[in-house]
Amino acid sequence: MSADVPEDIGSEAIERLQKLGLTEYNARIYVALLRLGSGTAREIAETTSVPRTRVYDGVETLEERGFVDVGHASPKVFRPVSRETVVGQFQAEYDETLRDLSEELSTLEPADPRHEQTGVWTVSNSKAVTDRVLEFVEEAGEEVVYMSVEELLTDGIIDALAAANEGGAAIQIAGVSPATRDRIETAIPAAETFETLWEWSDTTAGRLLMVDRDTILISVLTNDDVPEETAIWGSGSYNSLVVVLKAVFTWRINHAHRFEDSGSVTDDADGSSSPPEA
Amino acid sequence: MSADVPEDIGSEAIERLQKLGLTEYNARIYVALLRLGSGTAREIAETTSVPRTRVYDGVETLEERGFVDVGHASPKVFRPVSRETVVGQFQAEYDETLRDLSEELSTLEPADPRHEQTGVWTVSNSKAVTDRVLEFVEEAGEEVVYMSVEELLTDGIIDALAAANEGGAAIQIAGVSPATRDRIETAIPAAETFETLWEWSDTTAGRLLMVDRDTILISVLTNDDVPEETAIWGSGSYNSLVVVLKAVFTWRINHAHRFEDSGSVTDDADGSSSPPEA
DNA sequence: CGATAGTTGACCCGAATCGTCACAAAAGAC
DNA sequence: GTCTTTTGTGACGATTCGGGTCAACTATCG
Image: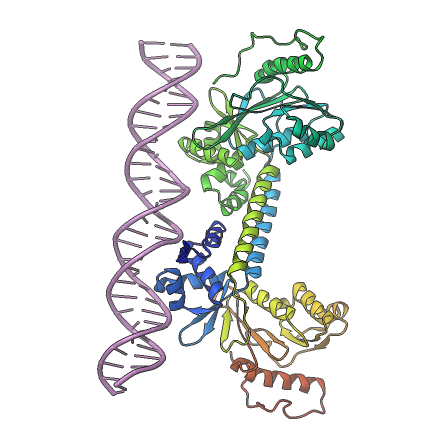
């Protein structure tokens, strides 16, 4: 009577098993067996909508992976191994491949990791953007300036900033509301906080990062239909993005900080540098 | 000049990446980028034998997964993220799905796990057999008897036996050579060891396990072409396999142990029980 | 303005999986 | 004993997804 669809019992588990490499049939069969405790081909077929004749194939491959035992009886009976065993198998398998992969990739990675790039790079996924931010902050030597909307100032970022601060870098954070200001001052007492460097709350701006006046990252929030974040970043003192933004950025910081200062602070760029295209 | 095939550089890594869910193209592209540091579509195509026109698709999906950044230049330039980041992404992803899976499966597992089965079950894969052995040994209360060829007495098994011994179970191990006997006595001082319970070195017998005289597992090594192990097991005092084998098994143990004893110990079987076939 | 290179999309092919069917072997009913 | 039902095995299209090639459109440069 309730809105529950009977066939959907365990569908989440089935999806995850598929993600881990099992076919849909095999995943369905295993889950059904787990619910039944044990069962014949027909019983499985009836509760899974897997064609009965295909249950045998599925069970066979599951047996090869060590996920079911087959019972010797006139109608063959199948029995699933415990979920701990299955999860353990997967865990072991992926631990191994990941370990090997890491090792193999390390032999391929070129000596010079990166740096002193001349171009401007884009990162599309929000998680990837965060990764890049963390990466840069981690490498920070002297100074980190970070400005973002509230949602993008996560604990992970704060932790990374705190770590950079421990390493001797000055931290400046902008765009914080009085509420989160406390959070930051607890985690990073030495950090300077600003309300905002400029007005952008009505734009699609996402975040803004500058590390050692040498690496800059800017992101925008595109809301075509679902909210997504896209960032561009550049590194190196000759990088055009860095050259342009460093100027306006540092000017704003000094301006917001000390009201006596006027004009640009660094003299290596003015408005004539071409802005990043598109 | 050397026998190295140039295209095979990183092929292992490529295979593993595919195993983790990337397509062949995407895996090849990422590995190539890692070797190049960064590169254009053409450079990638030349070093990977991936059709150049397909590099764009691949790079796009890789970007969505956060594995590459795209550079804004007239020929687009692509840059891989560090291998640590990639491995970390995979790790996080699989940790999450495995955790969720385990949770979901636990809600499906029936209350009564198993036990008091009447049938005889088979397990095909050697790793699965070991899993089952460990499972049974873990549940042991009073007694474990284990006999196997040398190769199948691994450290994992010995550890499990030692743990069972800690829990109060008597351990009896047969089929050990004098060499490995030392290993066992170090790990499990309280264990009894036998040279062998009977001659089977010329058979295809693999191993033999009896737990609490209630669960029995036997395996054979099939050498059709590649060596494989297949086991059958049964549990419960009314299980036919258990009934038959318990008799011959315990008789042999007592026989090997105390030479004064003669005749059967349990009265439901005597020498007429056939030895494990084939 | 034409040539070269970069970029995008469309199309075809093969492998793996889904889904169904036909048929032999076995078990049970009469 | 035969007859019917169930069980097990294999084969066959249909569909999906990734691999592979091609044509066409765009930008850049001489």
